[in-house]
Amino acid sequence: MASGRSVVINGDLGSGKTTVSVLLARRLGVRRISIGDLYREMAAQRGLSALQLNLHAELDGKIDAYIDQIQCEIAASGERLVVDSRLAWHFFTDARKVHLITEPTVAAWRVLGRPTEVENYATLEEARTQLAYRAESERIRFLTTYGADKTRLRNYDIICDSTRATPEEIVEAILVSLDDDNLACYLDPLRIHPGGDDAGPLEVGYAAPDFTAIRGGARLAAAVRSGQTLVRAELTKAELAEAELAEAEAKARASAT
Image (cartoon, rainbow, N blue to C red; front, top):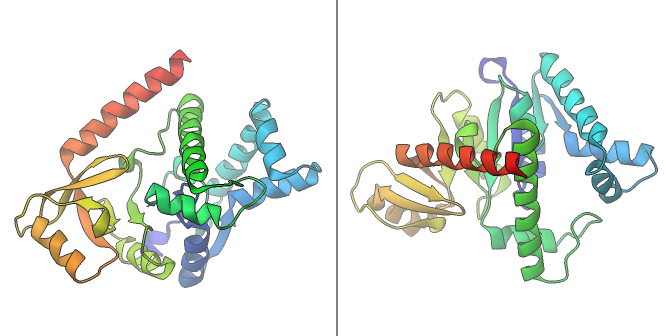
C-alpha cells in the first residue's frame, strides 16, 4: 500500500462503496472494516433493527459518540486497513480518502432493486427523492456535529464515478492513484456536459450533481466515442474556491438551526 497508509472509502447509498471496499482490501491484502457492520452489530446487541437504532441515535448522541470513538481508536492503531465508512475520511487524517459518486437516478435504481429495512421504497421517484433528502439531512448533521462537509470534493484524494464503471474498474483507478499527490478525479464522460473544445487536459467545473467541461473538450469527445466509463479530469480552481465558499455558508446555516 502506498506509504503504508490506510484507504478509507465513503459514498452515498447506491454508489457501490461496499463492493469496492471488499475488492480493494482483497487486492491490497489488508483487513477491511465496515463501520456500517459495526453499527448493525450494535443494533443486534440491543435487540433493535438498524433502522430502529438509526432513529434512536437521532435522539441519543451517545450512540454516534461511541461509533466515533471506535473510529478514532482504529485510526490510532496504525494498522493498514480499508475502511468503509461515511465519516472515516474525517477521523483517518493520514489515510488515502476515496469518495464515490453516482448519478442520482442510477443510485435510486440500485437501491430500489435491493430493498432493506433501512431503504425500502415503492417507486423510482420516491427512492430518488428520499435518498436526496437523507443525503442532505446527513450532510447538515455532519456539518453541525463535526464542521465537516462530506460533499466537498476537496476533502478527498480520489474521486470515482460509479455510474457506469464496474467495481473492478473503480478499484483499478484507485490503485493507480494511491501514490498520486494531486486530487485524482475519475468521471463518467457521459455525465460531463461538453465544452472547451481544445485538445488539452480535461478540466471540469462542478455544480452538484453536474460536471461541465471547461477545457479539454476534444479529450472528452474521444472518451465518449470510445465507450470509456471513466476519464481522468481535473477540477477547476474556481470550482474548488466555490466549494470552500459553499461549505462556509452551509456551516453558518447549520449553526443557526
